[in-house]
Amino acid sequence: MPEGVNDDRTMSTHLLEGHLTKKSGAQWKRRFFVLTNDCIKYFTRQEETRVRGQLELNANTKVIDYRLKDFGFQVISNNTALMVHADDAREKERWMDAVKEAVQSLKDAATGSGVLRPNYYRAATSNTVFEIDSRYEVEKPIGHGAYGVVVKAKDHGTNPASIVAIKKITNFVQDLVDAKRIVREVRLLRHFAHENIIGITDILPPPTIDDFNDIYIISEFMETDLHR
Image (cartoon, rainbow, N blue to C red; front, side, top):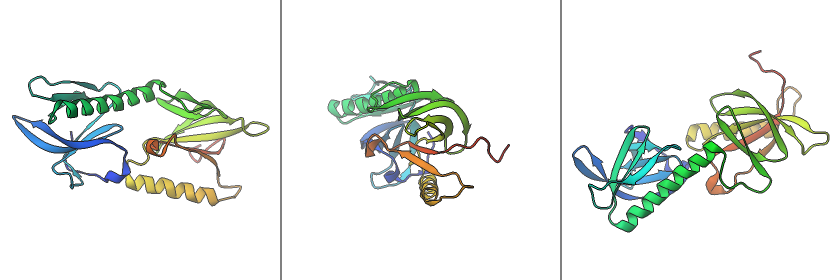
């Protein structure tokens, strides 16, 4: 669990936050914890923005009782165990349920399960699950980069059906600098209309504002790129 990481708390969805007491070596220290969609972070005090440590969650994360301490539980992820205890049984149950729910969401994303919006479907390619409008028929992956994976798709919303490229950028709001760059790129491309510039034709909305973690950008399809 790396320490001393700067954190902008406004850039991630907080599922739960509050005080827990954490096992640190032979000592127990009270810390302020924040649970996001894929991470548990803790701070020395609630008003601090500097992360003292964090544990990344994934589809294989386990949440179990820690019986050596009253109201204790542990989160085991990536061969690392975070041992904490709550102030009472109700608070312990609230935290364990919230972490389990976050892990289940990660499992759903990895396996392509979970509740879908009407007229949406999931397609897995290049170890990435796309959740997109059924008007777009995913055909094959065509590239990937620092910001996401791109697939070739058929747009059945046009007559005749046209070929488009769909870029999925995952967790784009986690990094403030990257998020600003992505928003700037989208705003610029939305205004361009030139035969030598690939234009954006659509942006898929998130399920809800609280679930705005991934962004899907649909653009015109090109048969080649500058590397070829």
